[in-house]
Structures are given as structure tokens and as C-alpha cells.
Image 1 (cartoon, helix red, strand yellow):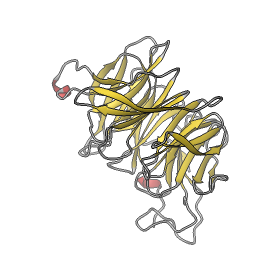
Image 2 (cartoon, rainbow, N blue to C red; image 1 turned 180 degrees about the horizontal axis):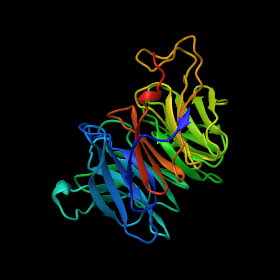
Image 3 (cartoon, rainbow, N blue to C red; image 1 turned 60 degrees about the vertical axis):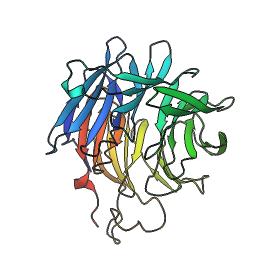
Image 4 (cartoon, rainbow, N blue to C red; image 1 turned 30 degrees about the vertical axis):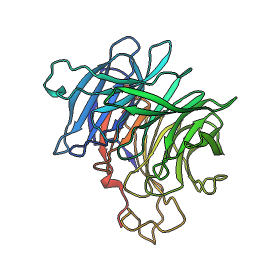
Length: 350
């Protein structure tokens, strides 16, 4: 099934490509996003869904000095987030704090808690500790993986360890395993590499070209989803990494983003440069889905594509599920359009 969005929209002033759920805000369904303007002063927008779910409210609007290429909210403090940014000539990364009285100030300024310096070349992403309070961060540039210790009270970040991806490997992104905090998946041009943070060594890999995004299934151990340029979406059981256990056909152009739902087994979102967001449902193991999951009738075989939201006017690079209301997601297209949507009407019934 496909059609237009009935969601709630919000327009940024400039182009943009990254949005994040504010997981630490347990009182509201909130998202944070940032712009990507080459010439204008960039902005960070803190957005909250109204209590009635009918309006996206801008809770805070902050200036950011550079183009924002990656943005992630801190999982344990709703006022802290990280950005990867470009000055036009080089890339940098930093951790920021929103001022405490931001709602009462005329022009609140972001406070830079720490700069993540020492990178060579393009910085691609920052990964926060998967859940709960911890001082560890990971940053990934084209050549290296860094493990940081962040001290917010002292406004400092120290490199704990660093390792190169090796010759002929150019890293592009990654994901932190929520089931094993010592494991990280890193994407490069020809494979997905798996790293052990205790030794900072590669432990294994999936040989796969042009992977744009990876995401771990937070509900099931050993499960990884990859989004690939032209070959769609693949679901992997990392105990059997040679062949994917399932394949979704993806998008009519490059599949750019993929994210697993934090609560419902087998529910996946993807987006791409075909200006479409797809909602998928698939069993990620050969076993029956666990109790409490969204499941189909045992006599009904589902098309894995539940719904295709296809009324965007530009490539959709940003996707984020709400951890507070896991049937809600936010999407961000390159033209700066944020849409918050509920997937409840499209989920298969028990």
C-alpha cells in the first residue's frame, strides 16, 4: 500500500539531512534536527509533539556555527547532543549543551561542552553509549575509530583508544550493539566491519559493497539490518554472516537510511533518494515472534512492505523512531521538511 502522508509537518529554513529522537525526554515526544546551509548561519531545532498529537512545536531554536552532517541526542541528558560539522574546508565534531533556561531567553546560545579533536579527513558520525548513563562515546572518521571518555562537568573529552581501519578501507558510519557494549559495527566501501572495543581490533566482517547505513535490532541479539545503494535492505544473523537471512527490495533509487523499531519486533523503516519512506514488517528469525510483538495471522502471508509514504519532494536522509511512543517516527527530507507520522494504522493485527 502506498500514498501520501497524513502526518504533522514542520519546515526548517535551510536544507537538512539529520534528525534524532530525544530519548532522555521521558515527558514528551521530542526530536532534534539541524541544518546544512553553506552560506547562512545554521540552526538546531528542538521539536516537541503537542500533548494532543496534532502539532509540532519548536521548543528551542539555536545557532550552530557550521553545516551539520550528523546529529545525535545524548541518551541520558535531554539537553546534550553531538554534531559532526563541516567548515567548508574541514570536518569537526563536538558535544553541545542547550542552556537550562532556553525557553525564557531571547537568543539562547549553545554551550560547547567538548570538541572531539584529532580526526584526519572527514568525520562521519558520533555514537553514544547504547542505553543508560555512561561517559563513553565513539567517533568515526574515514580512517579511524576513536573511543572517548566524556566529562560533562569538566567540559572535557579524552581519547581512551584509537585504531585505524587499515589500508584501502574508508569508513563511512556505524552502529553500537545494544546487546554487547563492547561491539561496534562500522561500514566501509566494501564491507561491514565488527570491532571489539576492549582490544580495538576487528573481529569479523560482512563482505558487502556500498552499505549506506546499519542498525542493530534492539529487540533481538545478533540481528543487524543494512541499507545498500542499489541492492536494497538486508537482514543478517551475525552468527551466520555469509548470507543474509532476509532481503527487502528497498527503493527505486539508493536506499540511504534504515532503522529498526525499538519496541515492535520486525518493524523497520527505510528511506532513500527516491523521495520515499517505506514501512516494513518481517520476521527477523526463523522462530516465532516473541510474545507481545506485532504479528500477523498464522494463515496469512504478509507482503513485507506495509506502506510507502511517497509524497516527499526531495531525498529523505533522516529517520528517527520515538523511543517514548514507538509507533511514531520523524522523517527529514533534504529540503528541510520534517514530518512526524504514526504507523499504528498500518501495523498487522494479532
